[in-house]
Length: 459
Image: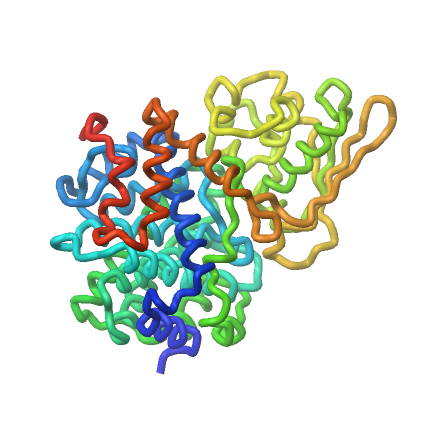
């Protein structure tokens, strides 16, 4: 018999109907779907996107599935790959902090592609909402079960399982086929933290690969191809291979309780989530009179995870991928400009001598937090030229469930993403309204109509 966590997740995926979803889970799914689509459209302008698109279209063009922000139609695996890339390439996609993973990205890209290729528009909005909620549940459960330091790029390694199950739910798979989704996903798990360490575009590419692999896994499962039964807790299963420590049994006991999609966090800044506590602290101190001209240095005391992910020097030759994962750079931008936005990662912005010099005044030390998945608490201390010090403590990141964005702030983020691509704000309102109406849509394909621009279609 398969491991208990797999059994619980498979049963939940098969037995849950849309009517079983509590209202907060439905609202959260819609909220974070809107966010994911918006940052996916913005990702159309991201670094290496056009090169990625050309490479992906060489694998197969033509089809029913749309690329976000364009009028290009592609096969489902190609669309899922490119869309997941776009959703993550700006480091603006939502995250589950406890899982240390962007659990919505691969799930959404795969489920959207599957809903678009369904013959005759057979997938309605409620089925898509259900698939997204369950896919996030699977991916987040795998991340939460791990209680050791990151070894692999977890958004991709858990994302392939969530994507496969989401596609299976869209296709109304039964128990055996859902279990095969897990088994075939295991054979395609990949994602290295070396790309994170070096700040390379391999990170969003790995999420693209996870979304594509989720569709492949579900296709094989649906075709009846046998797959490993013990994909998660087997001797050579996911946890043994990809995590140093884990407690799958503890997570299995919580399956079917609180829905993990309600635990997601918005990212108010287009940079690694681990930079956000420091950015929040910088903006707070800036409001208390700390500025580049009176700062001697600034020191961040933060958990080990923050150091692993974003404590690195700002470099004169860094590109946007590296800078988004560099607290020294994002902190300097926040102190200098009073915000951190997509516009701060252009070539010209990254080469500003004054900003790079300011980044050199940022330092960090490890605090006494032992939890390897903890983003907080963090303390930021500024030493000023008059000899005084000013400090701020961050106990919850902005955009997290403990410190959520308001509806106005969420919609402002959407408005920061779409107009730079389309040149107007009309599509923003249409997208917000369509996502709001998703549970009532008879054809889920209508979801992408507001962000499809046939004038932008190009091979």
